[in-house]
Image 1 (cartoon, rainbow, N blue to C red):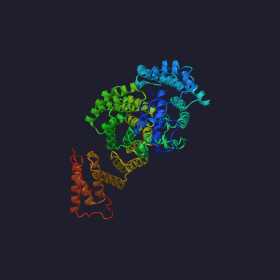
Image 2: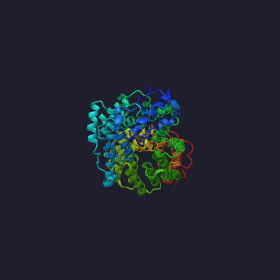
Image 3: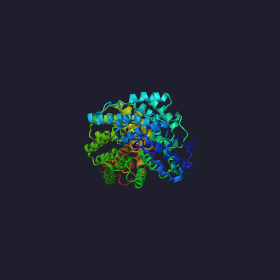
Image 4: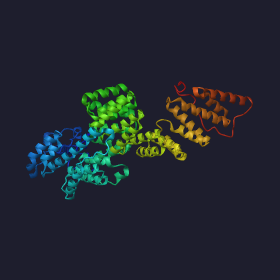
Length: 577
């Protein structure tokens, strides 16, 4: 239940950072990281992975342990006892023995224990009484009391950087987003290198405009924050530039950075590159479980059953009760079309952590496969509750309402997915189809054209655009789209479903025939003969052209044949049944 879990386990870092993106003194950065890692551990927060990426310090350069105050000395016995209970996850017991403690360290552990106790009870109630799909509105009952107490301390300026961080988390959990952002920014100023505060900010910033208006401290940790938020906001080029500069600065050994780069390539669907980086990461950190669910998504997309099977067995041996392990096994069963079993493992992941985003989305996909639309809708909605930036959940909801033939709902969800992924052709094609169903053909045309312009992944936008032009009797534009489509298919040598290629040739043959461009019509009709579904029409058209030529009909010279077709058909294109 630690709230900075599962995000790369980066440093809860030092009290004061070097200015800006200054990485010239890596020894000083290492000292800062070690110093704050110790302070974080004292408060039950996770320690640093980032320090490991830097060279070890000689004994004389190691930072001294945090100094003890008079209050620390008075609270020492209660704190030591409570910390042992905290480490055993006996949060109520820890909080009981910390009542009345005055030191910053003991007070934080007291409040944090109460917060985690509330979270644990909420999760237990969610799992035991309701199950993951009917969780309703189970709340952490401790939040309101914590907010009142922390608010008093905040007004009296008695909270340190860790206290501000906890106050921000409480505000966020109560959906007081604006106040939470202000407190996290304050926490970042007071304790600039504590990664937890930066990460919470990442979860609350929804677009680049919000980012511009934040007054953030000028510290080197800000570079890690910007790289992370750029990845979250799908600004992948900027994120990759930042990560490369961090590697160049001396963090080449950081498995956090390597995993983030792999995730970035996954987000832009550069699957080969992402797979390559994940494989390298596995060599460097073979027992790593974090991010392995993302790795399994890539293996799933590529239908790499043996590799996915190996990954699932490997993670089971390491820790079968981690959410990532359950998601990997779920993906494996999904790839084998065992959707009930896959859904079972995603549910298991959610019993371990009801706030685990990936499992909600993947479970929605499985319910879609099983034609259980109401359960799919619930799963996708829970995913959005966890993270409103999850475009896959918005897109999944759009698909679900499309199946239910509710185009207005469908349009809303596809729009949200498109806002999050403006350059993803799949969102644009889905939007175009929606507008088409609503008879908003001008909007549909814009979507299909934009999908083609940004790089059409599924090579369907031009065909859909051509068919729209056909409906509107815009025959020249339809012909242009079909020619562009065929050129695209030929240029990349892809073997696609023959139906659309044959449709394109059939339309072009008829178009050129009407334009009396016999040579072009004849060439397209011959291509039609290569496909089962257009063979007879192709032959009939060739006979008509021959007949007209025999009657002395000449090709038209009024209409210029501004289109051309490639000389040869791609390998395999005509071999499909």
